[in-house]
Amino acid sequence: MPESAATILRRIAGKTPAPVRMFFAGQCLSLGRNEGVTQFSYPNDRVNALRISGRPGAGVKEIACRFTLNKLVSGARKASSRASHGDSTDHLESPQPQHRTTPSNT
Image 1 (cartoon, rainbow, N blue to C red):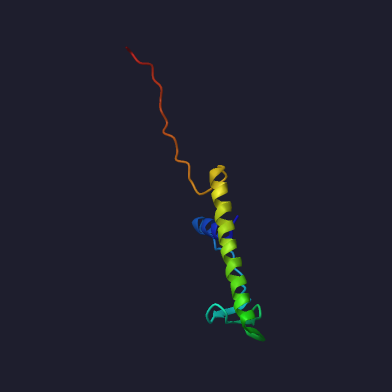
Image 2 (image 1 turned 90 degrees about the horizontal axis):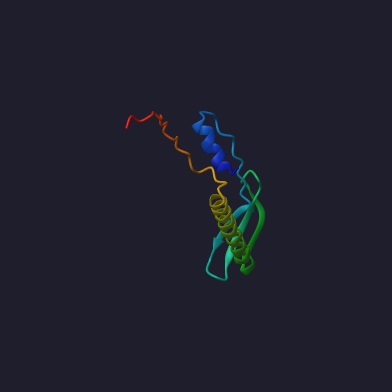
């Protein structure tokens, strides 16, 4: 189950959500199509000495952007696929009304 769905279900149930561990590998800055700077960081988000600038820096930024876009698209496709196959939990079944059958006197 995706992290966000698990968090929502835990909140609905009145429970505390599980902690989320974020990781940033660095920051990218585009300076046009052919120039860029990528500054890498440690897992605790402290900057380290590794940086790439110029055309290679722009290339790293392009790779990071494409990776992010591909992950978003594949996640959307998976969610769409689950919904179309009836495996989705994003709908709630409404209770069916109870109908009493009584003999009619006609």
